Amino acid sequence: CTLFPQGCGYRCPFCHNSSLLPLGTPEQPMTEETVLAFLKKRQGTLDGVCFTGGEPLMQHDFLKETLEKCKEEGLHTAIETSGMTETEKIKDIAGLLDLMFYDVKHMDDEIHREVTGVSNSQILKNPAELAKIHDNIIVRIPVIPGINDSEENVAQTASYISALGIKCLELLPYHNLGECKYGQLGREYTLSDVKTPDKDFME
Image (cartoon, rainbow, N blue to C red):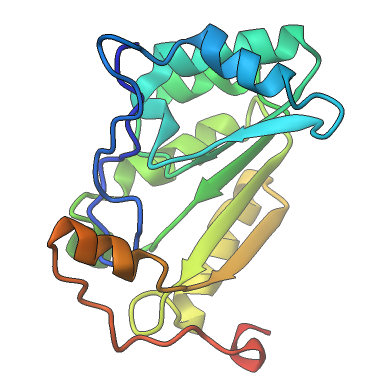
């Protein structure tokens, strides 16, 4: 892997990881060994690793090889994914993961397209397949006021994953950490007026 980008297939206006930021170079590529050496130096202070992004499954082969090495070292492994990937790719690494965090932005396909730029059909298909082979999946909803914070959307999400046998749903309050990064990239941050939901609303 010559580049280790942060990125994913979405273009969500509330995300601070919406651009490709290469950390490796052709002269000094990011390799599985580099990642493992980094983790080994911290053994004793960490028990595991969570691969996030962007979307880590955009680099499926790199991710799989790194996960295999992590398991050889006895590390607890987790992933945070948007699920926007081919089903076979995510199933291919499921056996190497102790825990999966799976984001669901919205149950309504039309709204999902408006907000993220893509359909949610693949995102909703993958948990159905994963639940058959993995028993530690946590579905997360980033709660963005005015976009997906309705009781109806949360209830529909809960009902859908419950029917699949997934037992845990987490609601994460929106934050505006992406605003300064958008400024650095010269891009407009369209949610400047959106406030983080307060504790009472989240409860």
